[in-house]
Length: 224
Image (cartoon, rainbow, N blue to C red):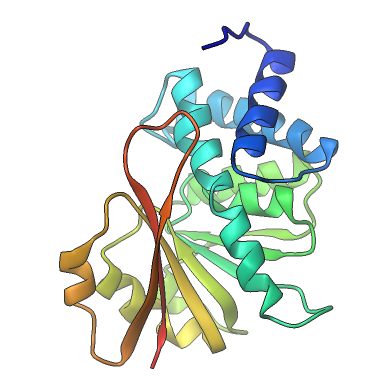
């Protein structure tokens, strides 16, 4: 295994390797923004406890690489959505903006809203949107069940709730033809079994996250 130094240049190199391992083609400005976002997350985390992960390398693996692993599957989903139409994504319980900020960075044509009930977390996402110049990123300080429309094409959640709760709280916000993309560790069979009968789990997609030994998967759902 190669050894990497520290600093932004070294992080850029490792991020490029992560993207390559995931089969992702990203423009250089996206890598630059990802490194700057990680620096912002570390800086704010010291005061606001945005994430329990403190180790810099683990933040890159468990946060950036983990979220980058969802980009190719989401691009596949966007391809079904129709040409010229921006994908509207809602990231529920976004915390420090994971995966929402990462998705907004890598795909400027996606319209990403991050919602969290904790004001300081929404404030951080707002700050990131400003500093990283992401006009396609919105921060919402609200309970998701209180959000007004318009509805979203993809609703995602990373560390928010069990599948039945995600569906119950967000179903009114799902656009016709829309899907849920829940980020999970190992396949959550108990949660899947507890879903209402009118929800179709149409794909449980294993993810291989660079640098991470733990199991990860995406649970794709839609109303029947």
